[in-house]
Image (cartoon, rainbow, N blue to C red; front, side, top):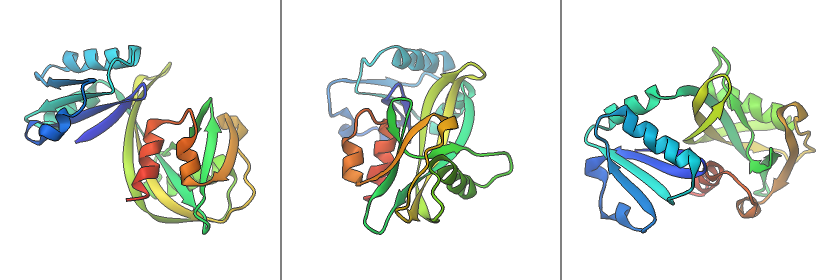
Length: 206
């Protein structure tokens, strides 16, 4: 199964055999079976970009590999990495950028490893010096548009990290206005905050 955020609404791609009764809970959702036509996927993406009509959208297919392959063909894939940094006190490192609360992350350079990229991006975006990578958390997907690529599917690898609660320096050239320490609960309560960031924080509690 894949979970992709489009305009802050979750799109789930899954196997038909995994589409059980638990997925039918909730009235404000759209459920569709994939007819093996990429234009069908484009219409769903376009609909989700234009309006928040549903709490979530689910597309299922007998062959998830075919569905995922067709979906990716419609988009430019860009890979990124980032970190959820914890201190010994249990606080986490958060940033505020372009009107949203976020976690430090960025694109993986050519030839760079995922873990190394995640560490580098956290250090560059927040100025933190004392940093240690602990474990993989999860991978998130979201779609956005830019002038160069059109629709982009961003795949972000997230890692749990450990750092000292030192003075932070937000990276202004990346439009980061704040880099602060706060409890995970306080960060979850901030608005607006990206839905995939909420998923990362919750994954750290599992």
